[in-house]
Image (cartoon, rainbow, N blue to C red):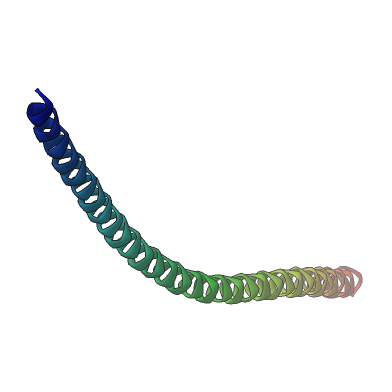
Length: 119
């Protein structure tokens, strides 16, 4: 029985050694897989960061362009307001001139009619 027990002990040692090698191999494979995944994620992160930088520069350019458009729009609004004010001033002046012409015409007609009536 002693020989059988020794024989089992040898098999147990071989089996334990095999299991340890398989565990080490699996851990190494998992480690390599994790390293590859980590490297791939790092590259994806760098790609996303580069894209974000690109999008930020595009956004800044568009914001600057939008600010220029706002400034141009505000300038145009000021010019339109000034033109409206000038037109209203000219309209008031033309109305005054028209009233004066009408008054002069009424005066002239009155003078002519008065001379003809008296004369």
